[in-house]
Amino acid sequence: MALPAIEDFNRDDNVALGTNWTTLNTGGFGVSSNNVYPNCSGDCGSIWNADSFADDHYAQLGSIVAVNSAGDYAIGVCVRGAVSGARYYGYIGLARSAERYLIRNSGGSPTALQHYTGSGISIGDSMELRAVGSLITPILNGSTDSSLGTATDATYSNGSAGLAGYSASNLLRGDNWVGGNITSGGATVQQLLMMMGMGS
Amino acid sequence: MAIRYYLMPQEPQLVDHGVEMIVPKYGKGLNYGINEFGGNGIAAVTMEVTDSEHTLIAAQPDVVSVPPLDSRLNTAQFNRFQTWCEARGIPSDKFNSNMTIFRILSTMVRMFQFHQRLNGIGLSQIGTNLDRQIGALPLSARQRLQSAIVSFGWDDKYLNNNLSLRDVCKQVGDFYNKRVRFGEIDE
Image (cartoon, rainbow over all chains, first blue to last red; front, top):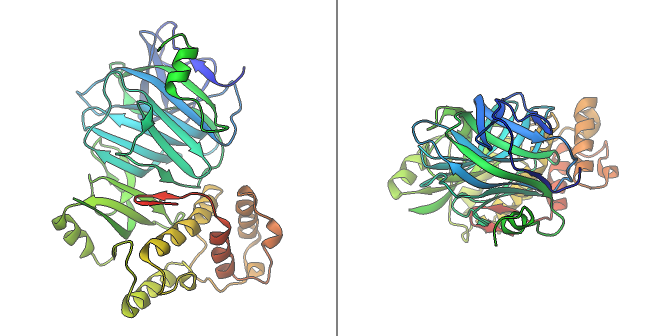
């Protein structure tokens, strides 16, 4: 396949993502109603395995389509994920506690690099995480998530783009994931939505 | 609310959504960003705090409360800072009292990048004896130092056995000339 990788999750409901995805040993994601949802007992991580990513790459979740504020569930994206060490940088949002995190997960042991309390994620939000050199930049709805802030962390220099989350709930869902390399600033969510036949 | 900077320990804590996460030891639930000193359990932290929260955090014995970014440390403060650094394996002679706090933090964060990469490739700590020569380190440690240097695209011929760990840590901070972002520091 060729990057950017595009995944619409349009298939039968399943407890796993199936072909093209590798679940990190912290747990993964499932498909429900043609959307993706976190489906693990702790921190969820899944990476796209059909392509190799350059060191500088991004992951996007085009939209949050359902949120579950009844419990502590999170969904988001990851970059520089790898099976070896079960590690990734993740950008996740939680509706109930109205928080967003930029984390570094190393073998199921997450470190909070950036934390914001005030708002979490809402239906319609798009989430993106970019890794360029040591800069790990979260982007919410097409703009840098300045409430959360960019992290400078050099722990991991390579890996794959994917999904990140927490716990299991098919009432928290996202759709239209894209992962690709960054050569000069990367593509915007809007550009990629247009490639997928959406947006304007 | 104000943006403040601290040097403080990190520790595993149960956060709001019930997961155990490695977070700054103080300021639970507040908005923050960190820059870690590798796997040493210490981080430079930028945190959004009220005056009362700042008073509480700054009073902790294992916290260094960082003065405003445009200020400079007086002699007594600088001496305490140097002692704090050396006790944790951070080469204090990388800093001088003419540097603004902004410059000190920026320099520290650049050095931390190397320690973070070392942590990522399996060397979480290099210890506090910075005057050990590279040639006296275990082979695995030397290999990881070399791997970390190469991973940044730097010339590994730099890693001379006659250099001290202090020399290397200071030099790699100079090598790291890419953009860093840490709270209000963006250069």
